[in-house]
Length: 229
Image (cartoon, rainbow, N blue to C red):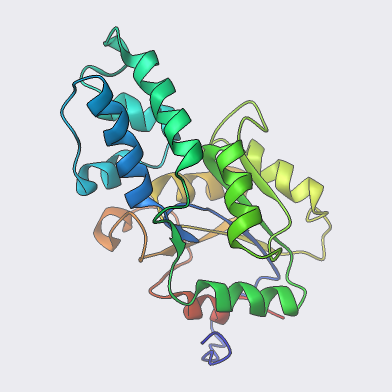
């Protein structure tokens, strides 16, 4: 449970959080795999394994499909396949998707204690907003997905948009970005924020070891060591 935090006097404290979504707040991998394979099957293409999908995610769903479809965008059926994926995923993005163990307790704790929070993700905005509304019980007021600003992570525009709309540019807020990938580490760096990298998501510690970050966290409760309430 989040309330059982361990005091650590040697870490920098933050009082606002920008979250990544896939691989950080939510385990979305199986629904993404199923949607990718639905589209691939429809076109007679070979299906992809869960581990392949894990490696493909992080740069938005178009890049996911570029990596999943044989020959990517050069395939004459790419756009049709991508459209099939998007339509299927819009209707099936909450079948197996769920918050990681302990995450809802942490979000409730932060919300109860007035910690401002937002989501910035490369997921298509319609899916990001649907998940925000239906999974997080009003705990996170804003999701900034693909389509809200002109660029995707690791460009910092989405983070800057979220901070502006939540008033987090005020000097009283010390904001941290929390994610699970090299894209998230680069996003935080580009936005001028510190980054916590979680190890329950889509990348291993070995894959992230040389990426800019303040610390690794092994479970959601450990985030409490870094947030001041």
